[in-house]
Image (cartoon, rainbow, N blue to C red; front, side, top):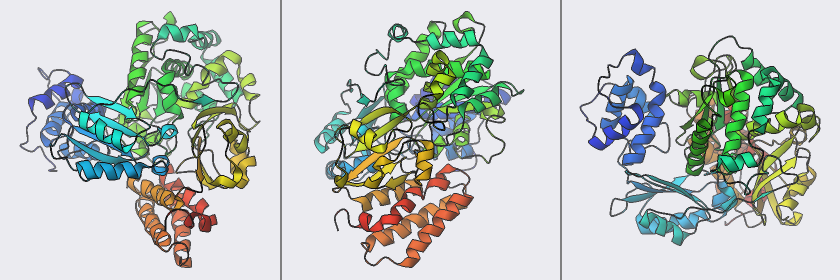
Length: 602
């Protein structure tokens, strides 16, 4: 791409798509006002891709002129995200998940069939209308194998499909359509708190939500006052559920006391950790609860505006959250004076476009601001200098979803649940070789074996290994069934709860393929900003492929030593959590490589 505007010109369709986001260009003068709107670059790129299927040089030129962004800069953004293409692409695309859960459930059979019928991945079929691509985890692991169908056009289609077989995959791509899934997900545990409305409430009805205690917590928050909400959150000892386990009350307190204005709230809904689907289920089936929880957090921290950064592969969540925001706004529950209490707060959805790194909070800020989603160095921390350089509180969906319960029942009551150091309940995404995959809510401290019994149980002798925490987590054996699922329990066992993934593999699983897929995942998802991660993830995959190719019998001490050294370098020197955790699962597997290399086909 040239560093200056080329002669390429947008089409009428592309101009219409861009103007649909930015408004008509008549009278526009560019300059400072346009630069103030750079944060609209990502929505503009989405609009182009949804209308045309790919982002041409002409469309990018027009968008850059409208936003006063350098073409090379915008090109760097457009090429950062996996869901965008700057080369011609067929309007119909079937994104087939080949990540850990789907790989284990037969996604390779689907990929081979699509290749036979439509040609190689990424190449347009004979009619030029459709193609298929391999995709990292789509967050549908409870119903694997899965796919996402997208069709660009005047009325774009984006639909999740799961479970999927080869015949259905061919049919969906040929017709450009797929039936919407109306089935509620399987949820379990007792008593249910965060999941109590799933499958019982119409997710598209504010009235139904209010009939099931909706917005009682916000009313109580106004009675307590902002300092009172902060006090109860601190008393609850709620820790973040995204993996870092930072005290939620401390974030809230820090932003509330920050002198700089405005304050922002960001709901991190970029749930991209392989094996994770808890936030998706909350957003799809209880969207008003997410909006209410954000409003409570915004009130407590003195935030004027909230953003939901939603992963681009969640179209149903996007639609239902947008509907919930519109209904809440119409009902006086968002806007200039929420519940007529003089508190101004509103929420906006920003969709990601396929970048695991954007789950890191500062990379997320850059993405919202219209930049490449690369992490920032810390300090300064987000509570001081966050989104648009202002104090920002960032929490994921599950963390925020705890706030209504805390506000209604009190922080002390919440702290009595779970363990002293891991309070409350926790959502676990159970998938793989269990009779009933799904989302389970249990108190912290519940054992791994108890959780698996809720999911239908599996005989210990049938367990090959269990992945805790996702691709950035660790493998444990059947000997760990007595492991208490708490932050301190996991640490003592040298494991992590991470994002709540519990993926079970039996003797039929090809664990060598699983390990290689994890290494490939981190190599592909590294943003490339820092050398330890950019180079380390490549070298890690290379070393692992040599070991796997040797079948375990001829592996060399040098490659094992190299894997250990690479892992240490990435943990110690990478800028963000991606590089710091990219070796975790592989390091845990290396303790029992015989079991891993003995699995699967030779």
